[in-house]
Image 1 (cartoon, helix red, strand yellow):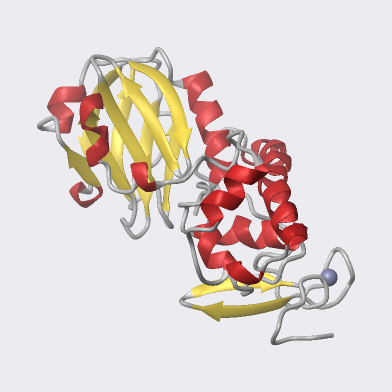
Image 2: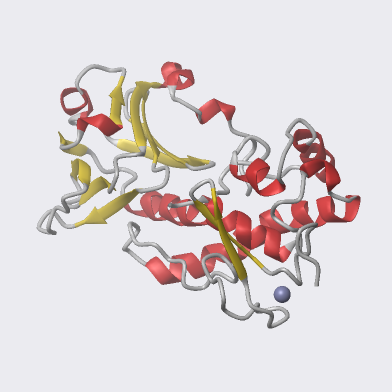
Length: 273
Ligand SMILES: [Zn+2]
């Protein structure tokens, strides 16, 4: 489940490795992940060069020669893989692109939950959810702008953060990390956050992501499809000691997702120490 820190590393890797390469051949192995608004992908994309790689929130965007755009939103189970053509094709491989640099770019997805769009740039508005997103967590925005965006959303702060409309690129894992760093109870209602908490949330959202990027880069190297989550402070570490206070980390599953936090460092209404 790649989020902004992982996808930023993927974006940089692709910028260094696939920009300037032509797509010689494309194969669609699992058509359910693909929406092409430019006819058959395999026919249209062949011979075109990858000109630029960008990221917006949880979307990787490849500019393809001739005004085409390949948008990849891996959602919970997708990932990009860059490898030699001889590398075994995983069963979960959905798309393969053979590149003129001798390597392959593949989109793999266990559950085919992700979504790949191939469009003309003027059709970018057709890409589901791309334009609903808030500014990226690594973008420059002021505390006032952050508060202003946040004001429009109600409910528990973790849910507000992960929806991607206030700031984008943060999912289940990194929201736990950010809330831990900001010392905020994940289920606290957005309206109940103090000015101090809002300030910490604003600062830590960016800081946690910025700090994570070099660690993720080091950890995954060329294996951009790998998950690198060993170094997280609290997420999925229920029962282990809190790195800040030593208290056991709490972990609960709600709405099919795990939330991990420290009851002592992130006190909430239900749990008081
Ligand atoms: Zn703690």
